Length: 250
Image (tube, rainbow, N blue to C red; front, side, top):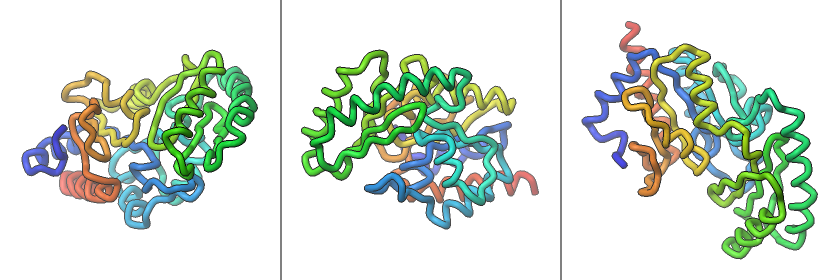
């Protein structure tokens, strides 16, 4: 992985900024800092202001693990072109069938994990997230969550930062969602920023010269070619993109 803000990469950012580019972002851990209670996650005022400015210069989409309505509510004051929820699965043409399948998992997970303290089971309609950030024994709690997962049928398990995600196997992932949005907005190139395991579905896309994938935090095993050091550096990236497109339009 290469640090995005190394001097030689400025030309790369400039090339993408001056192209017919779509900006796409994850929310938690990317636009907003990770917090112990997911309901409290919010963007810093500086990030909100920069994203607002960027959204006036570029088509912008957010592809979040959150339910679509939840993510929309956290973007108040920022007019992005689209918000995709549930790791790419929402909206979906098979909405009702997906919801019915997901609803079968919730009582099973609650029953299997009821004695585990610090576990939060989040029903997001199109998927379920089991958070264990607040658990004292995180390793054993994760093992218990994965053991509970084995009692479910027709489920795709995707890990994350102190969370286990339960998704319908045939639901679109973030990579498919990004391709769909790029096509819909007729963009030639994409800059995508994400921080977690479900973002690897984007990072693994083979689109040389068309996709600039950036991971928040360096991780050797990631397929992303570029990284920023931490979530706070999203402001630096947004500021550069605003400046480049603003300079170009002048």
